[in-house]
Image (tube, rainbow, N blue to C red; front, top):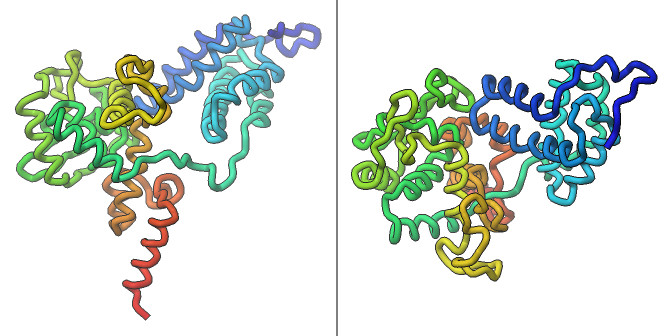
Length: 348
């Protein structure tokens, strides 16, 4: 789309590297500093930019300039809401800052990109995408009746009960579940590939709902595949290859939250021919949800049922202020109920 300038010497001093090679090097650093789910998010966002560069014939990161950044934003804008656009462009800017460190990008370019990142209103700071308690229990009722104690059932009920992140669910070993005490322990084992998002500080013990304990017990007895991961550990949730990947956990959530999984399709698709039912396309269903809205829904559900915010924070490994800002999302009726309960408890 553009070509490097050599008239003023600004860009001719840059060291050539393909955008894809630079992304690979950057992701190696990200992988070493963050949890798997965060790294995967960064990769998805920057891959969009890399694919676009290649489609525009930009095969040298040196060639990217401000006009390209505006063109890329215009390219992505129809597909993203304001929050997603901000997150994606901020991640691309981080990648470009790494390019500056490689001497492959003009130092001013990352700063130029800032003007293309949308500002969000207070209401847009966090996504309103969440799942209701009623919808969760519709899914769980269907699983209980037709797919009892399968891995999907065990994974989904644990996801909801604990409000855990993907990294936490993946980190669980069989030995972390205590059927007698009815608990599950989240442990960060970075040396063997399952670091919790917040590392050792994110370690915690969750008391489980009695139903969750029963489902996990029966899953282990009847349906869990006896597999070890690459480090000789025994994952709680397994695939035929061992420990489930981040994408496997995410795909399970997408599939189980499709309305046609338990009832009719609101999008006029036939389940037998629906393109969103095909492997790898589950997330494209307009009604499907990733694990994050399930975590958000669980946090909101606990708050709606008067669980103290400090206890919720300890259960899901989040700061109370973070829960208030990003996760606790009551609708107007729920908010009124909370206030009514608080006023009634306070008395005259």
